Image 1 (cartoon, one colour):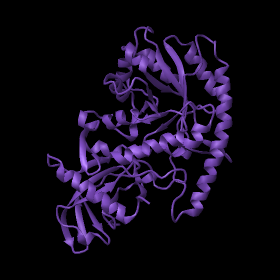
Image 2 (tube, one colour):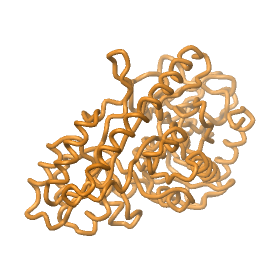
Image 3 (spheres, rainbow, N blue to C red):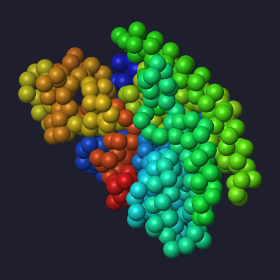
Image 4 (cartoon, rainbow, N blue to C red):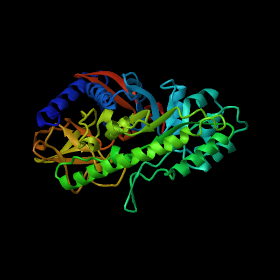
Length: 411
């Protein structure tokens, strides 16, 4: 297993060697991505997708050169962006000519730029799930000469016993609501309906093989099975209804149907309606992706913090560390001291913005100046906190890549 203490200690030595041999001294936190692990994860994702193309989720990466790297790997095509401003930047800088914005946007400045650029409008698809999204676009343009590509976001949650399980995303659930908005989009001059999206977050984003949580994991696996079965039936009926609109107005049929995430690739790719799946977190393997039955990625993204003091023989305190992940706030959103092994956060201080005390079997061996390598709970988010990422092959740095923040961007 790649999670053994020996492997983690070797990883620490390798990352430390890479940093030491790098010509410029690094200020901390030092962000590093292990390209050997990144490439291995990419190949495994492509294997799981079984020939269905994988769209790269930029939210989970946020480093343009790593997005380019993923797009250069067999089986990957196109980007799923998280904001329209980001999509416009990726398009302008030729990172990709096929970008779908995963969430509806009300960013007036970005929409105005989209409707003013024939090239961007031909390469970027925006997400809609409400008439208001179309109205806003129309309010920002002088003419409909540049058609805007739109995709409908369809709720992919499980409805069971009066409850809904899954991300609270789209109001579009049944065939009627989807086809009504689709017809409206087709009828409107200046819009082109090109795609559909069903993101089953309750399958893709929830661990289902967690040690010490066997009963809960069994329930999660059952809910996932029910979700996949229910969604497959509903996707088929919606796809059939949308196919029936071919020839209505100038609608030529959907160009893509996007689904899934790193944790649901097999089931999403197996659905005959789905033409592409999405993955991003599976490339970098944050800690929230450690406990899935379907796959075991290799941790690839780390941030290194220096030991700056030793308050006692049993405690080593590093500088910084409080990079807490989004989502429901709990201990699973905290960063994990990973390499060397045998270190843990304290219950009282946790991971602090300016200091993080570490205890555990290895704390006594750390000297002032030593680096401790942490893993973040989520993918992409830590790179909002640094300008550069060291890309490491073996034990050397092969590139110093700029994050979005390093490019002066905040999406």
